Amino acid sequence: MGESKSFCKKLLGYALGREVSLSDEPLLKAMQSRLAKENYRFSVAVEMIVTSEQFRSIRSVRNAEPKK
Image (cartoon, rainbow, N blue to C red; front, top):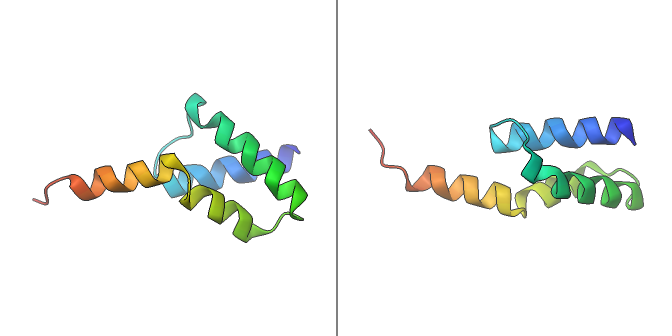
């Protein structure tokens, strides 16, 4: 499970545009568990990230900022 944790952590950090924090741990654990159940399909990881609160809130914050 070490490789899947590293994969999930890197993918999540990239998608969020920031370092993964302690508050992201429940999502990382859920991703690892679901990936194991679904034969480690990449689409499962992507789906979990884009539907996560972390991803949706970071995108809405960036979109709300005024453009210079």
